Image (cartoon, rainbow, N blue to C red; front, side, top):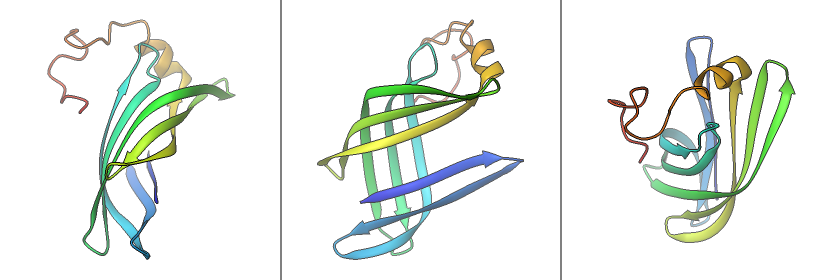
Length: 127
């Protein structure tokens, strides 16, 4: 079982979470994550390499099968995604939530954000 929550706000990054594996639970101390998205910036796939305090590394890969765009307020959109995942190759289920300022989504979604577009060109790949 893997759970983590990473928030970037107010110039800081906060990471909380745990890994429960082989009967031992440990706090997450690092995550390298990338995601694929559609033209609305809704996540369609994720890849996370999660490290914990016991020195273990756990790979989580997921594909979105259901997405609910939750409009929290006129200023905030939460994309709530249910996913089919593998955790170190073992099948499971997962949930990924991504929060976006609505004005940012409106701005970005009027641009071409497909692979190779001028907006995306030069950025690190999503996987």
